[in-house]
Image 1 (tube, rainbow, N blue to C red):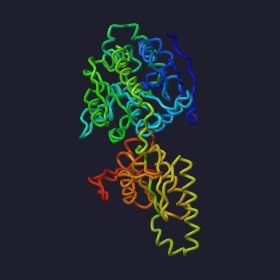
Image 2 (spheres, helix red, strand yellow):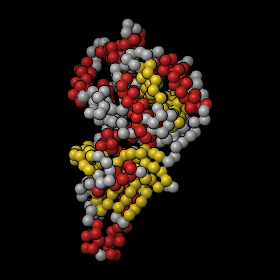
Image 3 (cartoon, rainbow, N blue to C red):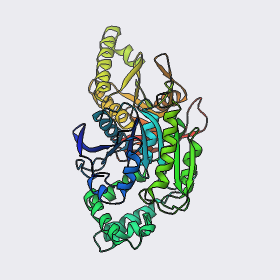
Image 4 (cartoon, rainbow, N blue to C red):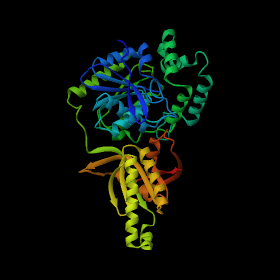
Length: 451
């Protein structure tokens, strides 16, 4: 099969390259791992067999992530939120209202967040050889330490152009079963050279360093298949087991083998993907959408010292001040795609489909309102929200309100979950330490947005 034509979808001001192959009854979006391009040169090597087998039972949608392959190069690398926008742009461009997503390795966290945030756009999720966090943590011991990743990045920077180094990444680490195949090694080197620059590779690793979607996993409400080769150590199979344990109803299949790369023995993976997705389709589950829950970022704001200010200004002037306040907040909500849910006196409650947009909206509000002589505080949390008769409720809403109450005047305060999901956004934080949130069990680590 020849490589399909490459087209472009517009995502903001960035062009995302994509291709479509196959004409099956349902759509599957494939998110490749790392910086591997899914287009053109990929078809000249082992991935072609993988794509051909997938396209035999579905309409397969391939794309290159922004900054890689044939998509526009960008300054720095985007966060997960921006990459979700790119997936939606590609789906819209090909007329796909609902699809399954297959997320490989570094594409797994993006798949999980997309599935939890936009359940109406995703019918099923397949996560292969992936992880929820790259860093080793107290309750997640299978990642690497920050020091280990820094050393690995330094090694790659130093050795990237040395003969045999890039080939060794495949044959010694990602796909040891390809060892000795000089033709594949030459193709692999050409693929990486055209997929991304050495600097982009390092930037991606640094972006992933602080990314953590563990809190998102319980919010996935779509059929999910987790695949992991048992002897793969990039990451270890325990990462796959952790993911399956934390996604409600997820199916885990441990495959034989040690290769992390998905295009080694493609039939082993595709057979499981086909069995799972065709089963979802044939059972009529493809169009079933759980509409009473969604992952969202909640934002609460209020004016500091509102009562004293109202007394000082008098009723009429205070009413005019509130009108200017409300108009300013609503302009920022429109700018950052927030949804206003409630306005109680001097405070706003809004939701967003992305935490970075919510943070930027909150920061813009504090700066704009300061020009009106008003000091506001803001708090944000990302979690699963309940949708009830057009209203949003649940524990995530209560946590967001309590985070806002803990904020200092002029401060934008966020929960750990929000911070973990905006890695790569360029937003910086100052740690505020552990806090008790009234009515919410446990201690919560909070962070103030650094301006």
